[in-house]
Each structure stands twice: as C-alpha cells, then as structure tokens.
Length: 386
Image (spheres, rainbow, N blue to C red):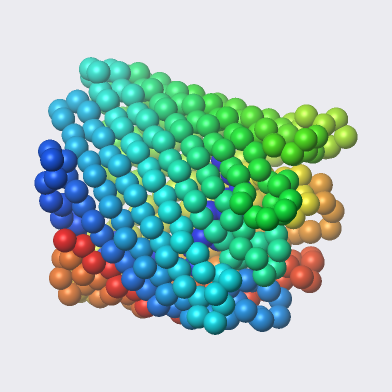
C-alpha cells in the first residue's frame, strides 16, 4: 500500500487496452510448463518527462519490454512465474536512462470445494522520472512484497469468508539521504464476508487494518490505518460487472504531535458492456495515501472514465479521462487538481501482432507554482507474441 503515485508515474507509456482481435498469447511447452514470451517495443515523444513547470526536459523515449511467463496447473492448483524487463532510453538525456525489472510468483490451491489458498510474492526494481524528489534525478527504488489469502466457502454458496495478509518493503537507492524519509514497511490485514443476494450479485462487509513503519528514526509518518466498508459485487460474466465499496477510514499517527485524520472512503470499479464489442468503465476512489513532499498523508479523491470500442475485426479505440483531487495534509497550503486524458487507436492485423498509436495529456494545477505543470506524450507501440 505504498503511495499510488509511485506506481502511476511509472506509466510514461500509454497503457494498451485489449485489442480488436489480438487473442491470448500462445505458449510453448517447456519441461511440463507452459512458457509464454511477449514483446512490446515503443517510441514516444514526451514533452515534459520531469513534470517541471517550465517544460525544460523533453525527449524521444525508446522502450523495449519483453515479458516471460512460466505456468502450470492441475485440477486443484495452479502456479505462475512472471519476469518482465523494461529498458528505456531517453535521447539526449542519458542520465534518465534506466532498466526496470519485476518478478512475480503466484499460486492458488483448492483443498476442497470450501477451502482455497492463494499466494503471491513480488520484487520490483524501478526508477521514476516524474514528480521526483530532486527535479533532475530519477527516484530509484525497490519494492518487495508477499501476500497470502484464504477463502472459506464454496463458490456457489450463500456465504463466503476471505482473509488476507500482505507485507511490503519499500527502499530507495538514491545517493546520500535523498528519499530516505519515504522508506517504510507495511503490514496489511483484510477480512471480507460475502453474502449472495442471488444470481451473480453478492453483498459484502469488509474490515481493513494497515501498519506503516518508517525506517527513518522518529519519522512523523509512522501510523496505522483502519477502514470499515460495505458494498456489492457482480461477477465479470454479467453485462454490468464489478464492485462498489463505501465506508469510513481513519489514519492514526504514532506521534502525538501529528494530527490524526478520518474521512468517508469509497472504491468503485464497474464495467458496462451494452455490446460484446463495446465497454464503458468507471473507477473511483477516496482514500488516504502515504505522505509525500513533506506531507504526513495525501488525501486522494479520483475518478476515471473509460470507453473501449471495437469498430472492425482489426481496429479498436480506447479513450479515458481521469480527475484527481490531491490534498496534502500536514504540510499546509497545498491542494493539487490533476486532469489526465488520452486516446489510442489499435490495429491488430493478426492474432500475434498489434500496433497502437496514442496520445496522453496531464495537467496539474497546484497551490504551489513549482508543482503546476502540463505534460503531453505521443506514442507508437508494437506488441508481439507467439
């Protein structure tokens, strides 16, 4: 549960939606496992990859991202290993060049119709070029995580219970003490009770607890977070699918000199498919995130609207718009309004090849002049698989 910005700012490249006819990548058998390699190569022009107010840093960026997946499954279990590399080269800005790597292992075991266990371990070594602590230096970090979950109740039962525990460790690799104040460990526990209302729809009650332990001695950001939510979910096979959770959360700081905060919270992730070839989506959330730029916490309220449409068996489009209100608490006088929108056209001449042309724009209006910026990205991507 690290600050979402650390992940969102990795998306220099406009994400590729599900394409017109590009199916699931084919695999080859390798020692009893299914091995699936894929490759994405992109060229983009980013007119402000450092998100500076004066647009001083623009570059052509080449990205080469191979991904390798190794998986196997039996009647009652499944295992998957995924390794990805993203090499990014910034023309005329060699100091920004970097290679991101990630490794994820996943497993699921079904002991019987009522008992299931899931597990995930991950490691990510990456760099950010946007909204960094030092304007002209990449934020360099590693993230380790482990998560295990248990579900009791048959898939078709009237009631189910899910519990999970997750541990994350965030560390930075910048020289000196840069970003030392952000390094922390997080332990998160979630319990959810589902009750089937009928057919594809279930109601839920969920409790969450998180413990944020910062490495920096006497950090004012050491805290716990608690939330209670109720909601409703609907299976992905339905025309209207997804889920909505609403509730209340509180963030309590260990340091008595730091104000505690509480607020209504919500999460929504809903898709509507009026036709098999057209999907409308909405993602919305309101939650406390970990502090940044001197703030003890950031209250993030955001909404994202999207529309994917397949026009022909070979051509699809994807458009989206996102608005976020970021309130920096504990630092005083900063509230950011972020507008983010983009569009892409995807051409899929064959099952194993896809070409997309996209554009994305960010406009951040902040109470602080040095945090106000606009950013435009123009992108051409080729995705290949077996």
